[in-house]
Length: 526
Image (cartoon, rainbow, N blue to C red; front, side):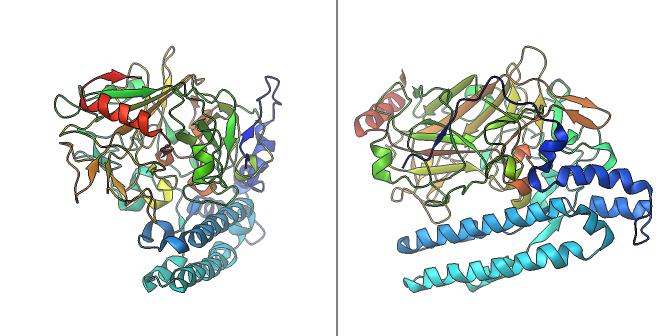
């Protein structure tokens, strides 16, 4: 137990030039810089300047079908083995992306290099892993959908693909029309789903003057927008910060728990929900508040007996999310670690100035208690390559939250305004399970009127609001200077659409009952 990393970040953190940090993924960032510098010449294979540029712009990242989301009926006794194999699939993609980033010159000289040397071998590894998943399920008498074997093949994603277009989503003039759902919740009005500022989004490449991120895998200039120039798109007057919440009917109370801002630097790159027993299962770093024993190897018994940072000692729940970093050339403690600099997550980790954890009610009626050890994941850490069906992202700035909520761009806030990440969790529960095979189907979002479908029960809705003091990035000639970004799986290129949040309920029975009573009777408790 106790793998959580608690290292005080030194105020004298070493400064590193962007070139050295770009080596994080096998030198991908440096190779891109050299690649474009040499694009004015013919290479040894006789490619012209335009051919070289075309090849460079072609491949931004690797997109693989998400096998885990399709596994909705895995027997309990097979889940540990399946989770381990799913983590192997993530590791294989990470390794393939690192090879993609470090072989740009070879790709320029051989149009078949990516397919033959990266994507083809990746398919073979994935096919073998999916077959082991089949064996794990069938060994305990479960049924395996043989069509899942077709998910072994991966594709490459073009550098010009917009985050808002991923997974077949279409954009109309840069704005998603018609009340786009955010992670299943109606936001009302138009989402600024990838409104383009300053030209074409490029999926993390250096095309047309776009600047590769310090880690060699994003973010880029098109991932940012001056929030003062964005047309208002948030529905006003509905809940806190313009987000759906309890309304004027139903259960109108709230319960706030104060668990700090991870001032003790409790971090790790595990995810005990999706990859139990697997070190670095997330391939990016998490902030943890509340429960202090959450790592890949924590049992429910250990979590139940853990220390908590919450003021209310009846709340030993675990709240965790990917860290936010500013890529200003600073290297943090994990610069040479898996999930950190070795996987393109570089820069100075920013501690939230505020971390507000609030549970609210249901517009239609009363809520019931959450079961102990209930797990909820909201958002999708792989949304850039998966498509945004499970995305649940709200980026804004203080003073703008009731006007603008962004999905596919990070806001550049005006002076005196802070960056805000806000997440509403699913608030309908199937009444039986604390988790599900794909970690999603046991919970769901309420409809706009608060109703829960399929016989699900309304539970308190967790709202997480994180506020950061972020030095405003600058956009200069199609590049971004000192960008900030969430940690991501390497192939997801630090896109804002990948933001996500995790929760495991370990409220004591008495404290959970107090929460439910406060919410159902219209009180505001903490």
